[in-house]
Structure formats: structure tokens, C-alpha cells
Image (tube, rainbow, N blue to C red; front, side, top):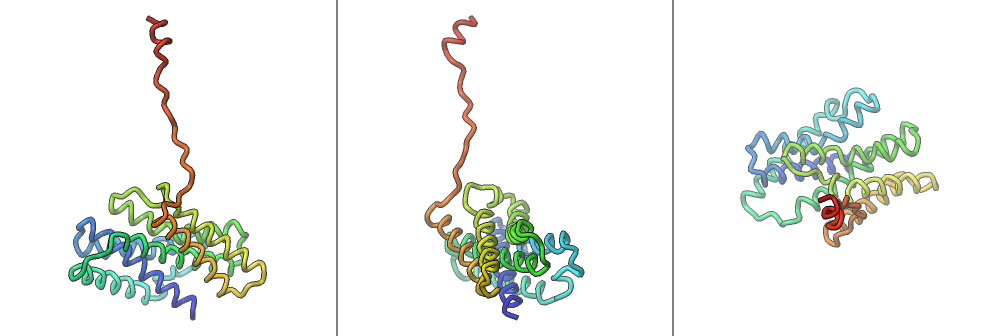
Length: 214
């Protein structure tokens, strides 16, 4: 029941994230709801399809689309009457990333999948919705930027799996994994934490070589 409640909370946070992005792009009401929906259930839908879980979670439980709709409309109402903080989208996204990553990892672990598959399922569940949101809103996806994003999801899912293998209670392991994701994302947002970048430098032709060819 606790994990189910956390999952609904994650859906609400990701719906808020999608609605905020759509509002900043000045989409209409339908566009806001679509962006919120894709962000909230995109990763979980892909997870369920790959794991052959039937029916897909939001089809079996209408609570999920209801939460998405309410969260999107409340976000629109809020933005009409108050100014949204600059980093509200990223902070909301960090919470959703943590909740969804650990939800996906927990489901994969319960199915007895190998460790690598558990981490991949958790990362995909956490990242795919935001990826689809950014593509729909014509943004470079966060997962492809230099910010620590997918790396935070991988670290969180890995921490959960390690704690579980050490005999830690599953709920405690989930909370530990969530904390890892959130800390890494907050550090990326406020401290500029990022992975090393390896740019390709195009060297201009040597002046002497040019003159020799002439």
C-alpha cells in the first residue's frame, strides 16, 4: 500500500512537471493535459510493455489518469494566480524521477530479473516520460544534456539493489534509492554537478602546410 501511494505521488509530480513545461511553451489546455499524461505514464507504460505486464498499470487502475488530470488542472490554476519559481520544474522532475525509478526497479526485482535488468528497468521507468515530454515540447531532453539525470537514476536503482542484496528491508532500500536520486539531481541543479564532457575539437589546418601546398 505504501509503494502504491508513492507511485501515485510520483505520477502526480511528473504530471506537474509535464504541465509546467507545456505551460511555459504556451500550449493549449489539451496540450497541457497530453504533456502531463505522457510525462506521468510514459516510462511505466514502456516498462510494462517490455515486461509483458497485462493489463498496463494505468489501464487496470483508473486512479492513475484521474490523478494526472487533477494534477495538471491544479498546476494550471496555480500558474494563473502565482509565479512559478524558476527551478520548480527541475525540482518537481527530480522527485518524480526518484519515485518512478525506484518503482520500476522494485517491480523488476520482484519479478526476479537479473541485477542489470533491474537497474535498466528502473532507469527507463524514471527517464522515458521526461524524454517524451521534452521531445513533444521541442526541448533537448534532460537525459541527453550534460546534467546528471539518467546517471542519478542508475545510481539510485543500483543503491536500492545493493541494499536489498545486503538484506535491508525492501521499503528502506526503496527510500535509500530515492534519496540517492534526489541528492544527485539537486546537486546537479544547484551545484552544477555533471559528468565529464569529451568534446571533439576540429583543428584548423596548419598555416605552414597550406603555404607548402601552394
